[in-house]
Image (cartoon, rainbow, N blue to C red; front, side):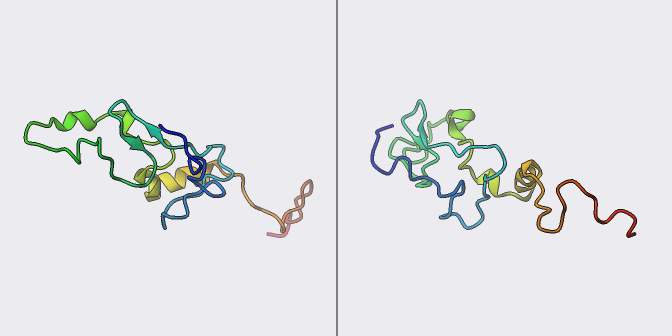
Length: 114
């Protein structure tokens, strides 16, 4: 992929603000990954969803759909699959609980209050 001044501007604060349902990866241990170019010359993960080299842009009756199968077509952090409820729950499970400001760091102040 060609480097340009915006190559590192794909996310803000470990999220993709241009996607309304995109999850935040902050606090999950998963780092946002930059876009990459696959073996077909298609940039994956740039959120433009169109590429002149894509089989979708050059489809004919002779195009085998299997050409677009495999990991090289899926971005690890900028993929529509992260917007599903199940995958968002996986991210939430990776975050540390936010019990503050109602939790003492060493004492269970609610012990015996039930």
